[in-house]
Image (tube, rainbow, N blue to C red; front, side, top):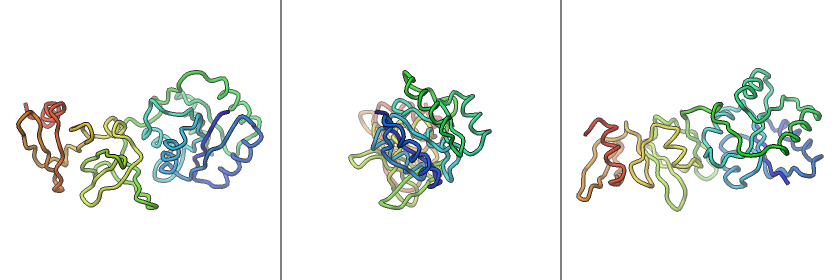
Amino acid sequence: MITTLLIDDEPLARQELASLLTHYPDIRVLAQCANAVEGIAAIHQHKPDLVFLDISMPKISGMEMLAMLDPDNLPKVVFVTAYDEYAVKAFENNAFDYLLKPIETERLEKCLERVRRAQGPQDLSPMVPEQLSLIPCYSGTLLKVLKVENVEYAYSDLGGVHVASADEVIHTQLTLKVLESRTPLLRCHRQYLIHPAAIAEIELQEGGNGEIHTQGGATLPVSRRYLKALKQTLGFQ
């Protein structure tokens, strides 16, 4: 059984694909998502084998969404698009496969055969952005997209991962690992990342630890392990 998610902002397109997939007993659709934020949450929740992903979605594109996921735990991806030039580019950049809208049954059949034969992880690194400009967040039923430049720091606790701007602290599905590798945020503690522009001062403490005071008035821990690298990044020896 191959478990899958459908991520597309067009309801009719999702329904059409879901209907086509009912003809394949070994394909099980776990959920349908209307945007990248829902898609990230569904991937974390369901851990599907395969995702059918629309390339062109508002706010956060399919390619940007992939850059927000941990590359070590990515499902296989089939890109779905109404624009041939996007599909060709995706295919040439080592995409696993792609489907053009409206989806043809014969083309879907060939795509699924390829999925069934696939062995090993899929390398999507050549086609995803190296840096994120936006961070998808949510608070209850409210979905928000924060600009990376407006984020002061991020941290993890038992409730998940949170990002803080000057105005609010809000939850995100992105991991600290992804935020560290895809944004300017720097590691200052096992559970904290800091935006260099948000640092007002670093207070050194006995034992090699420290505290960061941010421009917004927050205080963050700095562990000895990361203090030296952080000081060097800021131009201190």
